Image 1: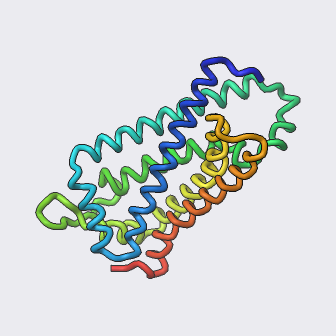
Image 2 (image 1 turned 120 degrees about the vertical axis):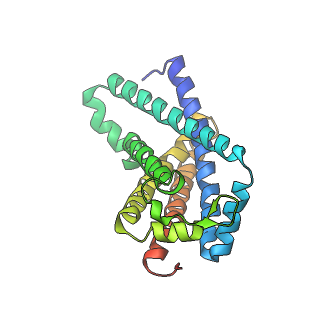
Length: 222
C-alpha cells in the first residue's frame, strides 16, 4: 500500500507521541515504586510533585493531549489501512505481523478507558472518595493510605492488572514500530528492537501489577 503524505505525517506524529508516552510511563513507574519503601517515601515523592504547583497540571494536560492525538491518529490510520487492504490479503497480513500488531487499535482503546478510570480513581477522587485522608496543612493527601485502600477491593485490582496486560501488548509492538517509523532501525536491527520492545513491555507489566498484587497478598500494608 502506498502511503499518502498525510498518512506519513500522522505516522511520524504517532511515533513521537508514542515515545513521549512510553517515557512518561517508565518515569511514572519509578515514582510509584517508592510504595515499596514505605509511607514516608511515597508521600515525600507526592509532596515533591505537589510543590511544583500548576506545572504538574500543565504536564498532565500535555500528556493527555499526546495520548488523545496518538489515539485519534491511530484510529484514522487503522481505518485507512483496512480500506486499502484487499480482503484476499487479510490472512497473509495477519501471518506476517503478529498478535500485538493486530490488536494495536484494541489495546489503545482499552488503555484510553483505563486512563479515564485511573484519573477518576486516584486523581479526580471520584470513584472511591473514602480512600483520601489529609496529610498536613498543605492540601496533601496520604498517598500511601490512598493506594493501599484503593486496592483493597477486587474491582480496581482486576482493572489495573487487565490494563497493564493491554499496555504490554501495545508497547511490545509500538516500541519497535516507532523506531521503524522514525528511520532509526533497519532490517538487521528491527528484530532486536522487537525483542527489546517486548522486554520493555514485560518490565512495565510486572512493575505496575506488582503494587496492587503486593497489597492483595499483604506485602504492602498499613
